[in-house]
Image (cartoon, rainbow, N blue to C red; front, side, top):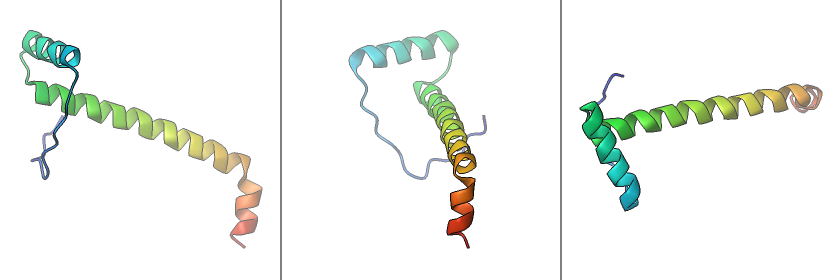
Length: 72
């Protein structure tokens, strides 16, 4: 994944058990915790974006006639 410079740093408070798990995974994979978090957020946004698009497409298809009439 291509890393862009951070325009605005983000502070993220994690529960101690999550921080410990994150640190353990970072250590086990030889990566930085920040890189793991960036990757996780990217995956979450991709997944949620796909879900929202699918719902929007379904609603648009279900109500195509109404949307067409509103656009007239």
